[in-house]
Every structure is written in C-alpha cells, then in structure tokens.
Length: 170
Image 1 (cartoon, rainbow, N blue to C red):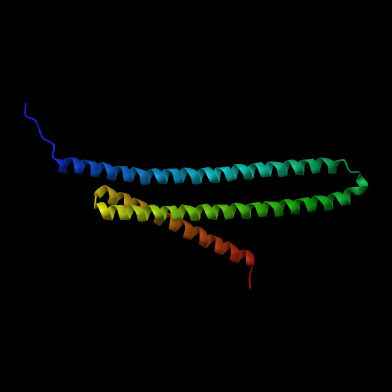
Image 2: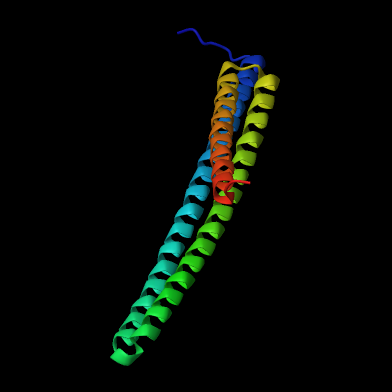
C-alpha cells in the first residue's frame, strides 16, 4: 500500500483555511450575540413598560374606587379630579413613550455601528485572504448594513413628518 507524504506547504494551507473559517465563525457569532443582546434589551424595556403601566393602572383603579365613595354634592369635584388624573396619566404615558423612543433610537444607533464595524472587518478580511467565503461574508455584512440604513432612513423620515404635522401650520 503506497503512503502519501504530507508536505509542509499542505499543512500550512490547511491551517490557513481553518483559521479563515474560524474568523468567519467569530464574526457571525458576534452578529448573533449582538442580535440576541439587542432583542433582549428591547424585550426588557417592553416588559418594564408593561409593569409601569400595570402600576399606573392599579393607581388609577384605586383612585377610581375612592372617587366612587364621594357623596353626590361633590360630583362636580369628582369630574374635575378625574379630568386631572387623565391628563396626568396622558402626560406620564407620553413621557414614557418618549423615553422608550429614545432608548429605541440608541439601540438602533448601536446596532448600526456594530453592523458597520462587522462590514468593515469582513471586507478587510476578504481583502486580506481573497477567499471566496470571506468575500461572501463581507457582501452579506454590507448588505445587512445597507438594509439597516434604509430602514433607519425610512424611520427618520416618518419621525420628521410626524414632527412637522405635530407642529402644525406655520
């Protein structure tokens, strides 16, 4: 049975390809971890918002029960107090929505920065290795960044339009 001798150049080529694959896996794993982290932060903020709304709802329900116990001669005061509570709740809700929008903007910005970082790193790796798999990974990273930029531009345009409408005619 003939034996094939492994040349040092063959070993170097195999090691280089394994190293390249490990780098691609590391980039993809980084994207997966980032995606999971962003989703976790958004879910945490939503859960926290729901809990805040539940507390506000419980507060409003307690206030409502106490208002029902007020006598008829104070009915006018009840209406004034209920209107005040509604306005306060609307203000708090608007403030909470604004905070949530700000956090969402920050998360989107960080996501965009990370996508850009990964696209640049993947392109640099593809340029260095000139390997087809690295080039495909770079194109994918650039595509994901481009999609994110398009969605962000659309969201920014909608926000500007809503702000213009809210400001009213000049």
